[in-house]
Image 1: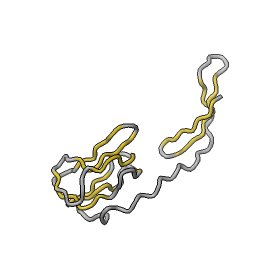
Image 2: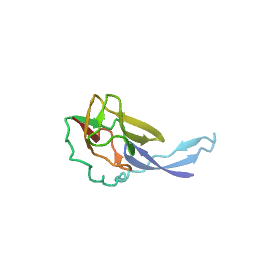
Image 3: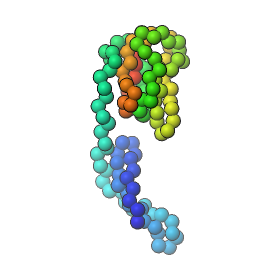
Length: 123
């Protein structure tokens, strides 16, 4: 018998898996009641006031801020990388949706972000 802790959509489950007697194939036992998901550390204070620009740049997926490529005041063209997120051992660039100037960077390296979280604003 083996115990595993599995997280699905933010819900944490303790699961016991035991080998079936007749086939030797693993058979999953009923999962225990879900535990509360671990809370992410609170984000550091944003570098500039949130919402300083009219164009919002949001995370397309949950992950951790791996690198901040742009800085406040920097002029960007559509497609220029602003932030790089890390999710499931992959680096995911978050790019400017259109030309503009960075009004705020609202995350820091190491911050955990959810999908849809505000990363930066452009004006």
